Length: 138
Image 1 (cartoon, one colour):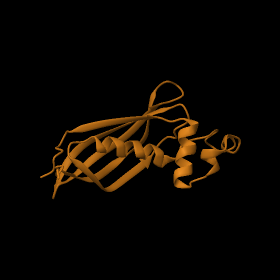
Image 2 (cartoon, one colour):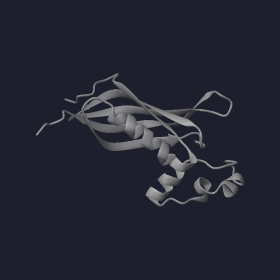
Image 3 (cartoon, rainbow, N blue to C red):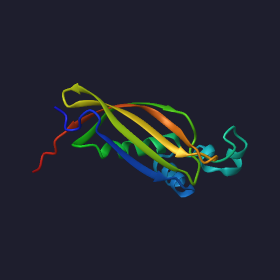
Image 4 (spheres, rainbow, N blue to C red):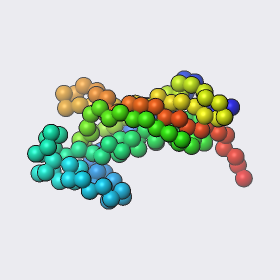
């Protein structure tokens, strides 16, 4: 039986800066100029530099880690809906939707940020399957 139960939820936030984007690119080796080069990115349909989509997905991972129990990622299905620009704060919320058996749970995952118009916009959505197990102390 999983430690986290249906309706448990958690949240994590990250303010994305140009430095955050550069650090992520350095860490992963993803040097796509849409993320790294403002002049290049300005000529794309994004109209400027944007964060890597997986950087926002990392905020989802941080939220999952705050659910009860030791959390082990098994799968993630994501749909990216809007880009994240330097200066935006990403807030990810995860909510346990279903117990699947064998300590596995299905979790709804959503990330949002305030858009240029001041309205909250959804950045990504999806669902994850994770294990939620008790922490075994040594």
